[in-house]
Length: 172
Length: 163
Length: 279
Image 1 (tube, one colour):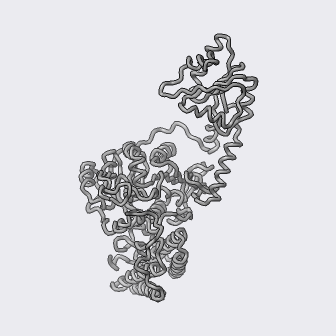
Image 2 (tube, chains in turn red, brown, blue; image 1 turned 135 degrees about the horizontal axis):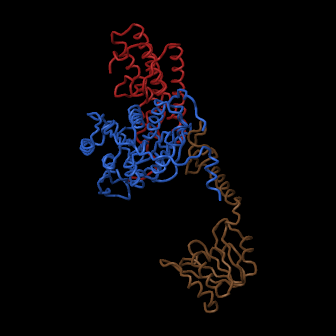
């Protein structure tokens, strides 16, 4: 991955919008999963996160205005290993997960997005591209701080947080 | 019903229990509603004369079903050739039951032979559970693997008192 | 039949039905759903021109979550249903989907003959090496040593089934592997599979986090195939038999002519079809 690969402001807008819409969709899906798994507390957090991504999508869409954004196939984005840096790592997803897990997951995703945009400001790219990338990086970093603040208010999950006395299967 | 290719008509034909929109559902109320719907569909369907094949006349009737119909038909042809009229009621519709139609088909019958290819005479028991059969009723249940032969039916009918 | 003149540009989410999946949180199949919708959006297919036929099992619940024509009914029989649909309606994009148990055990023979027939459709098998819906029994692709099921306390001790090798030997025209841990890469594989004429087989690694929690680590094991897809079946055979089961991407692209028999009869309206079933 290299900043050089993002050649224009339009391309940056296209990347940012896909990052947000994919992440938003992922949070929606996680909220649905938690709803189905009867974990309303965590579902609510994911729903809130999805709404945040949508708000930022609307903001960036307004910022892009009438600019003609290029169509980029899902696999052609300039992301490390083709993975959206803003999409949460769903590895920890579990039906008994706690708000702590959800917030930590989202904070890490925002940190990763901030780092991604930050790199784009390092190269000797066009000034407006750098400025925009810096703004996107700052927004993600700011949101990460908000999430980390909320996270610090949460009790850390107990060692056996995923222990279920009536598990879906008994593996003996 | 829409077919693939019709815009706006997309749906999933789902084998799981579903709601009226076709979406899978495990809700008890959807399950009950669909059970009732399927029951109504089966009960209200107009089966017409297809519920059974009814042939011949006389005071003796053979009730049978499925692949036993062929040998029974041949046995009744032997009887007819000897001038003994016999009725055939070959049931094609096991459920929903058709009590009025069967009663009408068996009107005036004094002897009923229930013929089936089974060991436990379950067709006979099924008839006994759901219908009032007229007159004297006997069962001829022959398990496989060999098919029921027309002569077995003919012999039972012509030696009624022996069995 | 009425047909949309042009398909408005739809986004991936527009191909979802809106029904909330009942898969376990963390299941790989969520990403497969994403990948399929991304692929359909990328191909700009009208939803009404796509049909997805599945078998039975967790992954086979896919059709109801998509806003395309779906059929989810018969265990192991997605391929014969899809084959019938495609040969009678060649203008449709026909996809079949299911899991490893449904596809390789219950429907194992259909899999071989679908590869052999080479009808132009795409079969996506979400492989998690376990029967998840029935609570965790060994499937044809389960490692012989996996001993976590009470049914196989010492493991199956039977060598696992290699679907890609079987697909090649049976005549599949396109063989690829994708992973739910990379939905964008999986979308690319699905797009290529749909575009490739003939029967295309996508082996989709999709972890079962409930009965095979160790599969969460698959995302660290997968890697792009080190070489481009081959067109030579002999080369493909060697590669498929020696790969580590974690190579991703298109592995074989054959050039056999798809089987498409001449159409002999058709109906335009559902009522004509229904008339054929009247007593």
